[in-house]
Amino acid sequence: MNRRKFGSSFVIFIMGAILGVHGDAHALSLSDLTNAQASQGLKTALEKGAIAAVNTLGQANGFLGNDKVRIPLPGYLEDAAKLLRSFGQGARLDELILAMNQAAETAVPLARDMLVSAVKSMNVQDAKKILSGGDTSVTEFFAEKTRQPLNQKFLPIVTKTTARANLAEKYNQVAGKAAGMGLIKGDQASIEQYVTGKTLDGLYYMIGEEEKKIRQDPVGTGSAVLQKVFGALKS
Image (cartoon, rainbow, N blue to C red; front, side):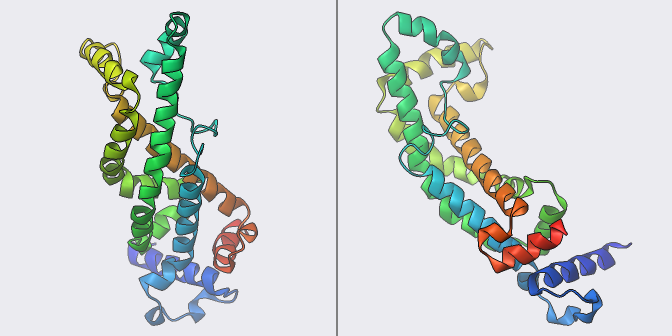
């Protein structure tokens, strides 16, 4: 099957699912279809999942109270945590953990507009890739479109919040030297960059969880469009 024919068939399939057409797909006229119409169902799914993830994480204890996304001490410091606690540094470590997770909770709501913009920019090729992908193809779409700019957007917020914990500055000094000696990974040499990366990991993880819910139970989402699109995929 050549690429042009495959693309046309894909558009027909999407429109058939969205409009609830169960007869001969070729009854639809390609001249009446637009990219916006063809991808509307998936755009609904993407936006729904992204907003749900942001709302879940961007609240008090959104990270700290969730075992799946809670941000732990970086490996270098985590390994030394027991020793540090035995030296009476437990409260300062807990303060840093709290600051890291609060920084993530503060930063995540800033992602909403950028995630929605990514949805609006989705084209038919993006939709095809998502439909033919696995259970985390939506997550991969968002990461590809937004991870780098969100990293830049989150970093100042994370820096401001972690600065409240005096240990952050001391950690960076020690970790920077350790990184120079090859003892720790580069992204762990800065507490701010470490937290920013973990914040993004948590955001995309939660988007993935929302995506799985939609794929597994499109009826349960309460959206007729999602039911038709993903219901057709399950049939």
